[in-house]
Amino acid sequence: MRKPKTKSTPQTMGYRSGLEEKVAQQLEALGIDVEYETYKIKYKIPESSHTYTPDFQLPNDIIIETKGRFVLSDRKKHLLLKAQKPEYDIRFVFSNSAAKINKGSKTTYADWCNKHEFLYADKLIPETWIAEEKGKKKC
Image (cartoon, rainbow, N blue to C red; front, side, top):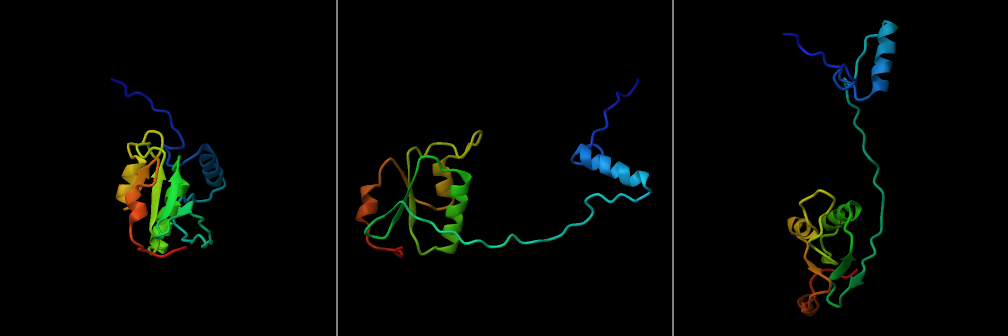
């Protein structure tokens, strides 16, 4: 029985694209030994400063961020804020905390908040938040 032929693609050759394969072939044709992705160069992305402007701040210093859509950039920003400024008590009020964080994901806004220890509510600020004693730092 004959083995079926498989078409050679850049991926089966170890390259990520047809262009990489063409350049490798050029080098080989010139008698140059091809070394593809054989070493790594480390680098750092420079720090950049940003400013966060909370939607609301309660008299007890609780910060309220309201979100209809809670996109990746928002989630990243709030994780950075939590890590760098733990003295602030930031809480979310979502239009729908059961919404998925992105298409095809099983994770909801509520799941994300629970995982990262953010308090959240739907539609309105809970009266219990408003009645809380002062805790963390004011902006």
